[in-house]
Every structure is written in C-alpha cells, then in structure tokens.
Amino acid sequence: MVESLHLRELGEFLKLRRSELRPAQVGLPEHGRSRRRVRGLRREEVAQLAAISTDYYMRIEQGRLAPSQSVLAALVRELRLTADQAAYVEGLVGQAARTTRPVGPRRRATRPRVHPHLARLVGQLAGTPALVFGPRLDILAWNQLAATLLRDFAAVPDRERNYVRMVFTDPAMREIYPGWEDVARTCVEVLRMEAGTNPSDPALSELVGELCIADADFRTWWAEHRVAHQNFGSKRITHPLVGELTLDWDTFRYAGAPDQQLILWSAEPGSISHQRLARLAHSL
Image (tube, rainbow, N blue to C red; front, side, top):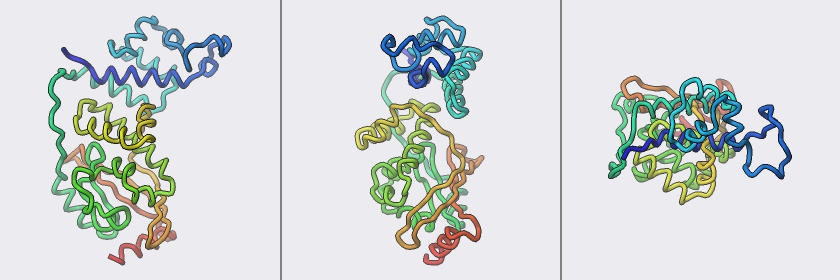
C-alpha cells in the first residue's frame, strides 16, 4: 500500500483555509447564518468558484487526487492564499508528483552534523551573534556571543537542542522574548512549511508529537496549518546584563549544505541596541 502524505496535508490545509472565508468575501450570498452547517465556505462553493465539479474538489480535500496546475492556481486565487501559502501548496503537489511513501517501519530519527566550513565561520564571527540551524531548526552550531545573548546552548542536551523545542519548553527562552507569542507562532509556521517538504521525516514527527503533548499553544497553532517562509526579520530581546535590544536577523544558505542555514544577528549602527550588543561582546 502507498499513501501520499503530501496530498493528505494539502487536503487538510485547503479545508482549513476555506473554513476561514465567508461567502460575502468571495462574492457569494450568505443565505442567512442559520442555514449554514459548516464554518466558512462549503465544498460546493469552492468548487463553483474554481470552476470544477464538487466531486473533483472533494477528492482533493480527501487527499485522493492531485489537482492540475490550472485547478491549483484557481484554488490559490479563490481561497485568497498568501504568497507563502501558495508556495506551500504548490510544493506539496510537486512533492506528491515525485514521491510516495510506502507504509512500513519508521526509520530511526537522525540529527545532522554541521558542515565544517560553517562551523569554522561561526567560530570566527566574534562580534556578531551567529547560529547554524538544521532543516527542523535544530541548533547545530553557535558562537559564544549567540550563547551569551540567547542561551547557553552547550548546557542543553544534544537531543533537546532545537530552537522550536526550546522556545516552547525552556523558561529562559520565554523570558528573553517580550513578544514571545509572535516568536512562537512564527516557529510553528516555519516548522509547518518544513513538514510540507518532508512529511515523513521521523525526527520531525517526533518533535511535533512531543510538543503537541508538552504545550497547549503549540498544539492549537499546529492544528491551524498556517505556514511561513522567513529569511530575515527583527526581534526584541530582554537581556539580564544589558537590557532590551532590538536586533535584525538574516538567514544565509550555504551551497555546500543546502539544508543548513547560517543565522546572523545585527543592530542598527549607532543605535542603543548596537551599543548594548557591543558591550555584551566586550564582556566575553
């Protein structure tokens, strides 16, 4: 037996997105709230908007059928998907066309090793907080300034050294982020995007299962099937030694290890945050 986890995820994702839309948002009559038995749009309404049969759309939601490119484009348009969401569903369909997963024993979860060139680079960036993330946001390497800024990663057991896990389960990570909820939600959305690329990854399944049990917020946000792809951003950090900093972070992909990301943190030159980051670096 062969099942497509990509198509099953696609169906769940589309179902949730249609539940968030009201008929009036897409130009359809409401017919009164009392007559609607489902939240959001009905399947037949989505099918009508996309100019396909209800049966065709139903099989897509059930994970039994991969939509054609034209149908997928219509669904992206009519369900008002964002650019990240569109990329996500397109990736799911593309992966489903290339791979299927035989149902059988699960492979043992493995943790990647940091590429030696990235490890050397991180160690030489003395004045810039630097991290290397693996495909599941596993923390593979860091420099001393990153550890001083965020967390003593060396004190965290290797298996638990995952950024998403730490954001949800490590009290120290909750304390340093004044906007913890935004940070945590983004983590879930980025992890969900990763799950669409490799839904059969046993390490990812293990991580998600663990966090769904450990944290009610994670469980709720994971079930929403929201996705995000972020290469840069800004975070506020409250540090016990230098106070509050606002730092920008940027992601760089290394061609020698495309599943690993170099994360660099920086502050606007001349800003209070820049001065405080420099003080932190000089304290090492």
